[in-house]
Image 1 (tube, rainbow, N blue to C red):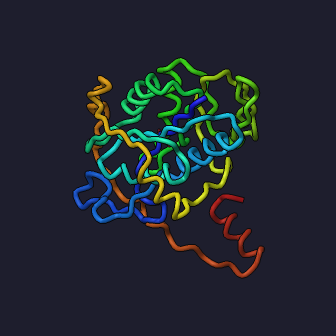
Image 2 (image 1 turned 30 degrees about the vertical axis):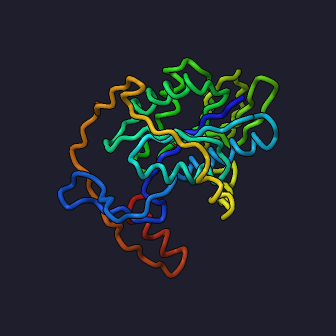
Image 3 (image 1 turned 90 degrees about the horizontal axis):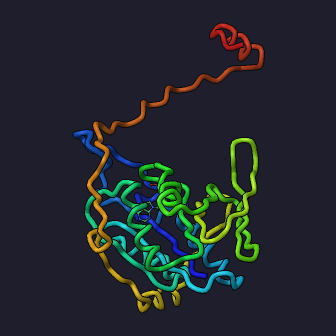
Length: 248
Ligand code: AMP
């Protein structure tokens, strides 16, 4: 069984985003970019499934600019076997990403597609669900545990009230939550080996997908600056203040 792992190149999670002066978006000039953290978890899970013998081959795919090839090389250095870059300089919305992934999956024929639960740049949390709908496949989103069960997969999901376990027939779609695993670092020898692994470059047109945006960003602005807090001497003062505010 093959695993397909979509990985997105995003602003590094340690970087404090700056909004462009004209409010048209986030300034990405000279900003460190990295693999979306949830996608690192997805790559790690696919590798663990390969190490356990459940998965035979891992294909990583990214839709983005030429530099997204670096993100794919990271996935290859971690342990993916091959990669597909669907190159575009345009911003691609989740629905278009899902349509491209559906077309890639038609070629790869994976038993599992493991995505991140959300990309930390747009925070959409949509692509996995849209892909499941387009492909008419079962989905286990926000996975904190993944176990193979014959030709099924058991996914423990982090839901509001606690944990829910679903058993899906394969092929299936999984999206990763933070507690699923701790991704490994690529070792230097593996980084060197990754340079020789196959990386194919395609375009959205190759897959017949129209990536024209359906959404229009009206304005991007900084969140309001947080007001400074007040230190209270003791519980009595705290309760008095809460009462004065009408909270207690
Ligand atoms: P989103 O719905 O944008 O929050 O993204 C959820 C997940 O979809 C990400 O964690 C990735 O696994 C995948 N994904 C979204 N955009 C892309 C992209 N441009 N290239 C590859 N994978 C993507």
